[in-house]
Structures are given as structure tokens and as C-alpha cells.
Length: 507
Image (cartoon, rainbow, N blue to C red; front, side, top):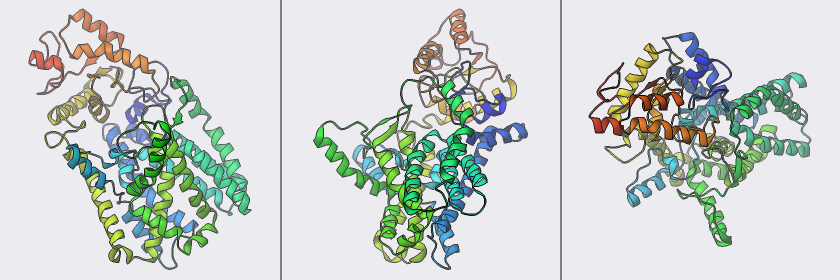
């Protein structure tokens, strides 16, 4: 995405499926990395630029926690530095996902490279910044907008405009975060009306109007660039565990609802302990007396209600996996507040100590999982052929240096993991990335038809006429064949009648 913006400019064109028109996707997070890529030339590539954006998110999130903690009266007197140090520390902690992860390993022999895959994701700060920094940036933008709207300093219209800019930024970084923010902010506004708080009664509606006006270009891109096949969200019953089906009958519904709180306790871990302890403490009343404190009290239950019964219907459940941050952020802040006033809990309470240690272990597992949990150690879909991946990296670097930008290079799209090499190492669009290339708005039938057209190129020998016809029908100007492809395996290498411009051991 970064390279597509740097090379092709705005609006974004679909990097996963070659087609006329624009992509229907939220790409604001990628704009600054794309600017770095464009300005840096050969000194900065798209991967380095994206990593820079991730690093900035890692810096911004704990800074946001400090601002929210101050505005919500969560920082004990004289403990500001301790509060910030604990916030930094707890940004490295996850829930208790390591327990079901180990149980599934011993029970079935399957090892998850990312522990959050054992159930619907509740991903915490560090791995969120590394895995989905655009969604985390959207969360930051929403809360920054709320901080601006809640202040009483400055004139109303400029504050509302700045707050609207933050909300529009959130929408451009993550559609799903913005969708969840709407009912949360509406509920907060009603709470403020009841509380007769002068700060955000008028600022919130005005900032929402400004955000809507500022988002019109992005809304137009998403509407024009997506093949509409139904509503973006649908009703759902969030499961606990890997079986993701709607319950049938009253009995199954009751069972699902009964185990859901236990699932959240596992996934929140130490942050569940912190939230419960805070809500039973005297500091709750002080926090509730502030607009941001009331926002946090509203944000958590509304978010849990939304992600329990609503999911995104486009491809994955990014709505449920990312919007849960509106419950995670309050729980994290409340936990930091409790520990800032009672730091001995981590040493003296066995429950707190165990939750902390297991949370650190889960984060370490996730940080190393993609490198270590793969064949030949364990069975997993990522990095299954390291030698092929490594040679593909060299091939894509050669492509970037030697082929014109307009030449589309096609890999074998049949297996989803093949998109990882293209996605990690390529810097230009592709005919069709994989069987799930509708992420940026392409029609699913068109994606499957193109996969069916180009896949045989990598599976069986064919005449040069047929090969050219299949490639040209997908807009493809070059092909990347690897030793993992059936055609290479059957022929013992690239077919003799192929003209190889680049050759390595595995590609």
C-alpha cells in the first residue's frame, strides 16, 4: 500500500487486484510512510517507511495514556512518573492467552504463531502496534479528538474543528474503529447532557459535523472503489475458542452467553483484575467527575456490547478484533491507576503476579512466534518455505531495480501464504494477490475468475500462445515462478522455453 501510494499517488489504486479505477480502502495511516518513500528515493524503501510509522505509533500510544490518565483524574497525587512508567510497562503485557494456547498445543499438537488466534482477537498494545498500527492510530485519533472536545480552553469552533480533524483522521485510518466510535461518542454525549457538562455538549456535535465534511473524499473513494455485496457489518455471537459459528436454539445461546465473560477474563488477564479493582475503589468517584472519566466509563461497556454481537462482513472480523480497543484502553488505564497507587500488588498478590508474568510471556510468545513457530519446528501457514521466501525477497528487489513500474509481475495466487512474499517484498501492484484479494474492494467473483485464469500457468506446461493469452487477460507483463510451484517441481526448474531475466536457486 505504501509503495502504491508513493508510485501512483492519490487516490489509492488496488495493489492486490489490477483493475481500472480506485481502491475502496482506508489508507490515511500509509500517507506519511508513502511520503517518506517518495522523498527518500532509493535510500528509504516502503518497508522501512512503514516501520517508521509503526515506531511513531509505539511512541504516541503511551503518551496518549498519560494525557487520558491526567484528564480522567486517574493519576494519584505525586505519582505522575510512576503512572507513566507503569503505562509503558503494561503496554508490553498481554492477557492470559498463553493458557488456552498451551492447552490447544498439548491437546491437538497445533501451535499458534500468534496466541490471539485461539479465539476472536483481543490484541494488546505492543503487538497491535506491530501487527495493525493503522487501527491503533485510529484509536489514538478518536481519544485525541475527545480530549480536545472535552476541554474548556479555547473558543468552541476552533476546538470543534480540531476535534473533527482527529475524528476524520480516525475514519481514514480505520473504518471499523470509526464505526464503533459513533455509538460510543453518541452515548458519551447523552451522558454529558445528563451531567450538564458544558465542555462537550456542543463541541461533540460540531466536531462530528466537521469530521463528516472532511471525510467526504474518503467516503467517496470507499463507495466508488468497493464492489458492494451487502452491509459492512452483520449480527454475530462472539465465540470463545476457535469454533466461529452462530449458536442454534435457546440452549446454545445461553451457553455462549454464559462462557463469554470467562473468555473476556482470559483475554483481558491482568487488565480484567485492574478494571474490577478500580471500579470498586474510591478513585472511581473522582474519575467519574471528569468528562474523560465518564467517556472511559461509557466506552468500555458499549464497546464490549458491540464486539460481542456485531462483526464485519467484508473479509475478516476486523470490527470485532480492533474495536475492542475501546474496552481495552479504559481497562489498561484503570489497571495503571490501581498499580500507581498500590504498586506492591505485583509483588504481594499471587493473582496479580501470575497475571503479569503470564501476560509478559504471551507477548514474548507473539513476538517470536512468526519466526520460530513454523515448519520444520511446528505446522503453520506462515513462512512454510524459508528458502523460497528468502530467494523471493531477492527476486522482488531485482524487480524493483530493473523493471518499469507499470510492469505487473504475477506470482502463483492459489495459496494464501504466497501473498506474504509479494506483500512483504514487492513494491508494485499484482494481477491478483491470492484467493482473498478483495480486501481493497475488488469483486469476489472477478477475483476468483482471475485466480482460475492465472493459476494453471504455475501448475502445468502449456504452449507459449496459451501462456501469453492467460497472462495478458490478467494484465500481467512478467511471471515469478518458484521451486514451490507444481510446474517447477514437475520440470525440475523453469521450463526451457521460458525466457528468464532473473534466476536464483528457488525463484
